Every structure is written in C-alpha cells, then in structure tokens.
Amino acid sequence: MYLLIQKPLLLTGRSRFLEDPLPFSAFLTDHFGRHHNYLRISLTEKCNLRCQYCMPEEGVKLTPRAQMLTVKEVVTLAGLFVKQGVDKVRLTGGEPLIRPDVVDIVAQLRKLEGLKTIGVTTNGINLVRLLPSLKEAGLNLLNISLDTLVPARFEFIVRRRGFHKVMEGINKAVEMGYNPVKVNCVVMRGMNEDELLDFVSLTEEKPLDVRFIEYMPFDGNRWNFKKLVSYQEMLDTIRQKWPDLQKLPSGTTDTAKAYKVPNFQGQIGFITSMSDHFCGSCNRLRITADGNLKVCLFGNAEVSLRDTLRSGASEEALLEIIGAAVGRKKKQHSGMLNLSLMKNRPMILIVLMDQHPAQRGRAFQTDVFTSREDRLPTFYYCRAFVGPALAPARTHCTAAGSPIGSGQRAWDRDPTGWPAEQMVRGGEGSAGEDPGDRLTHVDPATGQAVMVDVGEKPVSRRRAVARAVVRLGERAFSLVQQERVSKGDVLAVAQVAGIMGAKLTDQLIPLCHQVALDLVRVSVQLDPARLAVVVTAVCQAQGRTGVEMEALVAASTAALTVYDMCKSVTHNIVVEEVRLLSKTGGQRGDFQYEAA
Ligand SMILES: Nc1nc2c(ncn2[C@@H]2O[C@H](COP(=O)(O)OP(=O)(O)OP(=O)(O)O)[C@@H](O)[C@H]2O)c(=O)[nH]1
Ligand SMILES: C[S@@+](CC[C@H](N)C(=O)[O-])C[C@H]1O[C@@H](n2cnc3c(N)ncnc32)[C@H](O)[C@@H]1O
Ligand code: SF4
Ligand code: SF4
Image 1 (cartoon, protein in one colour):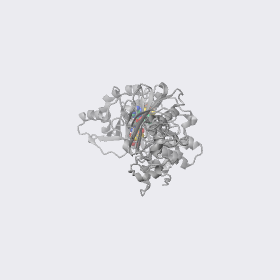
Image 2 (cartoon, helix red, strand yellow; image 1 turned 90 degrees about the vertical axis):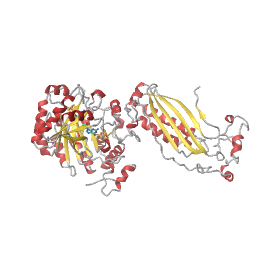
Image 3 (tube, helix red, strand yellow; image 1 turned 180 degrees about the vertical axis):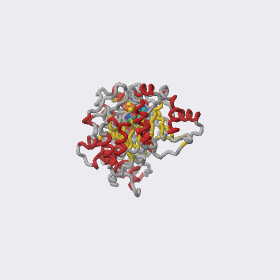
Image 4 (cartoon, helix red, strand yellow; image 1 turned 30 degrees about the horizontal axis):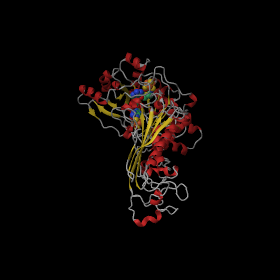
C-alpha cells in the first residue's frame, strides 16, 4: 500500500508513529495517536423519511446539486483515504439508497485496493429493491434503522409510511446471508422505550444485532435530558427479563457495547454516545455529501475537500488539508450538556450550514489547543495554557534568577554612562520625591528615551494579572457562544493570540525590557450578563523588572483578536476595561486594583 507520510504536522503524537516499523499514515493520525481507518461518506442530504429525532418535518435546505460530490469525486476522495490506510467505508446520508447511482458507487469503491469493507446505513425503505445489486457490487455490511415494531408508531416517528418495507428489507438482508444484520433503534423516552424487550426478542430467531442508540441532540430535534434513556437504564430493564444477559467482548473501535441473551441467535448492543462516549478509540472521519471533511460527528469544524479537488490541487495538497484537520480533532466530544447547547446540524445534513464562503477549501483554525471538555456547563469558557518560557537573548542583564554581585556593574551601565541608581533618581525628580513623579525612561543628559537600567535591581518573582473586556452585543455574543462565527473559534484563537502577545511585548512597547517569561496564562471567558468576552492574562517571571506590560499586552491582544474575529458580524464592539488587576514582586511593593 502506498503511504504518503512525509511532512507530518508538527504534532508530537503523530511523529511518534513515523518511527514505527509499519507506520500508519501521519495524515490520518491525530494528536492523541488515534488512527483513522474508517471513513463515513454521506451520499446525499435528502431522505424519503422525516424521523422526528433527525430531521425537521419540512425537511432541510438542500445544497445545490452542483455542489454535491459526483460519483467520480466520491471515489477519488475515498481512494485517497484508502491509500493512506482507510480500510472501511460506510455510505450514509441522508438516505444513501435514494441516490440513483448508489450501486455504481459501491461497485467503484470495491475496486479500491486495500478497502476491505463497504457498509451502508439505511432506513431500509428501498432495500428490497436494491439489495441484490448492492450485494453483487460488493456491499459487505448493512445497518438498517428501525425504531419501533408498531406500524402506526412507525408512521408517527418517521412521519411517513413504510414500516412493512423496512421489515421486508431486514428479512431480505438476513435471507441474502448478511450476518449480522445490524438494526439501529434510537431509544427515546415517551416514544419507544416500552419496546426494548420486543426488540431483544427479535434476536431470538434471527441473526440480528439490534443496537439501542442513546438519543443524541442535533439542531432542531428537540432533544432534552428527559427524553434520553441511558444505557444503564436500558440494561436494567432488559436484565429484569433476562437476568443472564451476557456481556460480549467488543472490538476496540466498536461504537456498541455488545450483549447477548444466551441461546438467542442474534445479539444486542448499546451505542452510548451520550452517557459513556467512546471517543478514546475513535477511528472515524466523515465526508459530507457536499464534500466537507468533518473529523468529529459533534464538531463544527469542516474543511471542503470538494473545492480543493475541483481546483485541481495535487494529492499532496489534499493530504495536507486532511492532515491539518485531523490534527485539530479534539480528544472527545464535549459531554451531554454541552452537546445539547451546541450548534450542530441535523444528523441528516452533517454538512455545512453556516460556514463563511471564504472558509471553504481552507483548513481553518479552530480550537487549537483545547478540547470542549474545558467548557463549563453554562458555556462559561475558560482555557489555560501554560507554555514553556520563551527565553529571548537577554541584553544588559544576567540570566534570570542568578545572583548579582557588586562586580557586575560594568555591563549594567547605560550607554550614557549613568549607573542605574543615578539614572533612576537623576531625572526631573530628586531623591526623596515620590517615585511616581520621576521620568524614569528619559535620559537626563540627552533628553532621549531610554530603557531603564534594571541591572542593579534584585531579582524577584514577578507576577501580574491584567484584564480586558470586549462587549460584543447580542448577535455576536450568541454566535461566539455557539461557535458559529465564520472566521473560526473566536475564544480559542483569542486565547492563543494573548499568549503570543505577551511574548512579543518588548517588540511592541518601545521601552519595555525583554523578559524571560516563566508563565503566560490567558483565559477567555464568556460573560452572558454583559454579553462580553472577558480576557484575563497572568504573566510570571523571575527578574528585575515587572511583567505588567506583558499581562496588559496579552489581554489587549486577545481582546483585539476577539474584535478581529467578530468584525464581520458587527462593528459595534467595544474593547474596554483594559487594566492591571494586580502585580506582585519588585521593590515598589504589591499593587491591587481598586475600583474608583
Ligand atoms: N459519537 C459517535 N457516534 C457515532 C458515530 N458514528 C456513528 N455513531 C452512532 O452510531 C449510530 C449508528 O450508526 P451507524 O451508521 O450504524 O454506524 P456504526 O455503528 O458506526 O457502524 P459499524 O460500522 O457497524 O460500527 C449512530 O446513530 C450514532 O448514534 C461517531 O462517529 N461518533
Ligand atoms: C442519519 S442516519 C442516515 C442513514 C439512514 N438514513 C438511516 O436512517 O439509517 C444514520 C443513523 O443515525 C441515527 N440517528 C439520527 N439521528 C439521531 C439522533 N438524534 N440520535 C441518535 N441517532 C440518530 C439514525 O437512526 C441512523 O441509524
Ligand atoms: S434517520 Fe435516516 S431515515 Fe430518518 S430522517 Fe434521518 S436520514 Fe432520514
Ligand atoms: S463524538 Fe467525535 S471523537 Fe467521539 S466517537 Fe464520535 S466522531 Fe469520534
């Protein structure tokens, strides 16, 4: 198999794999060492059903046909992934079996060397008609969705007729030797949780694998906690009838926790995306029907492979984009509550809804360092990054923390020849005056600005905390909160900008010393009461001069970055309250901000 693994991204996790004897593609290995060998391809956004948990009654706004992937594009993209090590492709949607060329797609995928498994997830309505040709084309795996065994209820749940067609499809699949035939049942309280035992009974005579799926929140599906029936609750219910229910070993990357009633032909499983996620072993990537790569089912970050492909880009260029997106994949989804608050498209789309056109085709930066678990339940967002200190070459002073002897004065002199003490005191003020009155940054001899000679000062631990508040207004605040700002993840970008700002302080503020910062911590939080982003920057160093400017620059840079990221939404953004909150260390004593 041809593995193009040069130029791995600058992620330590992935470079590790380059040393393995048979390395998995660096492009498909994420920051957490997960190998993505399973590609889910959505063939269409359309569907012949309107399941309540998946799709609004009126359907969804469809992407124009010209923007959908063609058969050739599907196969080309799949081929690219297969060359990198993907060995399983699942076709999904929307309803994949309403795409007229679905059999052709399966047949062409079958020709891809290295692709072991081709699966389809379908609502089963068109299955009886299509299954023979799909099987002949090379379809290996079949997952069929069915949420109720009661015909009238079926119509209620999916808002269409077709129960019997689905049942016939399931029977046909068994008849044609698919084993197991997986049956997906989304369990919702008040809808179908009373049918759990009936579904388990289905596995008695048939080699079915009935998977009970925890109801997941997507845009517009009216998810709430009360409707969620958890894995544990389902298991308890089933165990009451079948106490000897056996746990089966699951594959390392399986979504389902598998069980079996002894002596039943089939088995059951639980897909516990909500109560016990399986992100740690995630091996999935998705391509949406219009050609976006989506690295996580619950992530908003997408990058258009279609546009890159259509622009005639090379395989390498596509791989770079894919690798960058995979590199940004988060450790896990953000937990039940956050998922319910978060903006995600209906499952049927898993395609781009609010993306800025300019973003298409670009690997845009979102959530660079953190996973969503950092977000607290109320969307109170706080991230911390403690980086290794950047140690710029220091001039005119010893390394931070080293003791100063009296013999070291020579290099502490300012070019004007004034020793530090005199320079500080020798300005317009004189000894005994309030230090605040002295012009410490003006050379008394030349009248020119100078950096204060701090070489004489004792080294102490310096710490400063600064704050900036960015008032966004209702619309921008809400978009930031929902991570729907077209430029990307505002809070993540601002946080990193703050850190970078702190490190660049001496280059931005003319008379600032270079300080080897030991710590920069920038937190960026949403304040719903003020519809504002609150930036708090903490800088720390061992040195002879304070780090308040670093903290202030960090807070300001992060605040300005928030402005920059949101200015396409509104210019009514106010950066305010840039101020020092506290400062410790140094000779002048500690400072604590007091509101006037
Ligand atoms: N959290 C999470 N859940 C997923 C993902 N893919 C599928 N699921 C869940 O699994 C359910 C069934 O999806 P299927 O399309 O049958 O796919 P599958 O279970 O991955 O299929 P197999 O190939 O048989 O493992 C979906 O309704 C989701 O609840 C994923 O990437 N992340
Ligand atoms: C989006 S459908 C697409 C394929 C096909 N139309 C079907 O229904 O099988 C894929 C799977 O997602 C499941 N699904 C959709 N919305 C869901 C939700 N809110 N929670 C859990 N699973 C969901 C469906 O039941 C189905 O098994
Ligand atoms: S779950 Fe499948 S069948 Fe139901 S609306 Fe969504 S895409 Fe259609
Ligand atoms: S939620 Fe995201 S990370 Fe977790 S299993 Fe699904 S796709 Fe993978």
